[in-house]
Length: 239
Length: 280
Image (cartoon, rainbow over all chains, first blue to last red; front, side):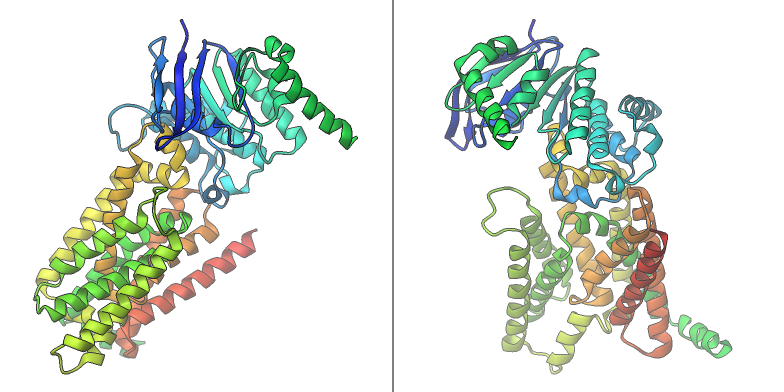
């Protein structure tokens, strides 16, 4: 059974429709990449999946006993975070607040969980360091570890490589792929169609034309060909 | 030195001096706790804005001849705090502009109605003491002292219980919201607490200098410390020390209380800045 099923979804804000009739499913272990131009509704779709914006129509069904709280979320970095005086451990631990009921303080098991996820992301040795002193790639690892603390089964990543240099970008993609191989479902928003096609198992392309399906079909489809050629063409030009 | 000590112990015999020291320390502690959050969320000027609102409210209370000013000042300030800190997308005027607008509007309006309707013989003195808090800290009644103590305890307990939530909210509101936290509710709660702190702090430094009490300790701590917890603990500590030092100096040297505390806060910041520079 599918983990997430979106049926005839209509997206938008306050009655202004951005996208209509969206159907797709996400199964356990999938690596779904959501691509599309700016303004096509990627962020709105993400907010709708997270339950922050109610859909204007249609529905999102959760399978395998999951609900909206089972999603670990990696948001885009905000201005506030850049000079934030917080240690890596404090930030990763804050992911542990994702659970029902109110508890004022962290439990020992939360701390163990945070340590485990920091180790997984290779940042355990910098647990006491200050977030603002880290490089962009290291900061993303911290936020990924936090997302893993909040949910173990599905990760939703919002443009995780924005602002990273090419080498770190590659490392980041490999890190995400590793998590996917461990069985975590990945839903990633990306503007980089080429990279999306390289790593993802499924593509959801939204905009004027909508495509949903496995990556092989996307590469063969007209819309896929068009966008891949465009990007390829652009990099050819740069050479 | 001995002369100073005897002068101090002479002053300490007066209950109003002891009250002032107790309330001053409590206010300094409370105001510093939320300083880091406000600075990091780019709301440094909220203290100023709300204090001016409180000034306007105080003017209304004075004109209407209401003896217990708090019953007017506190609700009005809380409402404005809620409006200003609401981070929704559909606010008409954004962040700093809204604060500036409400701030000067309330200040001007407050002075205007005081001028038009006041029955006091010493208008300039009244206005000056509300703006700079020159004497109000020394004229506290036992009732006001107890009120300050209770409100301070409430603020500190609130902060400790919600400490982890406040951290999450400050660091990443989107993530907090996505993990199911009722962000709007916590923002509202924080706004109310900040309004209470501002109204309390008006007694100490007056409405023009409140921002200093809120932001300087946090800014000083952020020069030196690397984790949120240590920033909070240090800013609480330095805030209390600076307030105490400022009050003692003002007693000994006969300087105005509020501005002396702020001057000590500035000095504290300078020292922390140098230490932070030397370390890096």
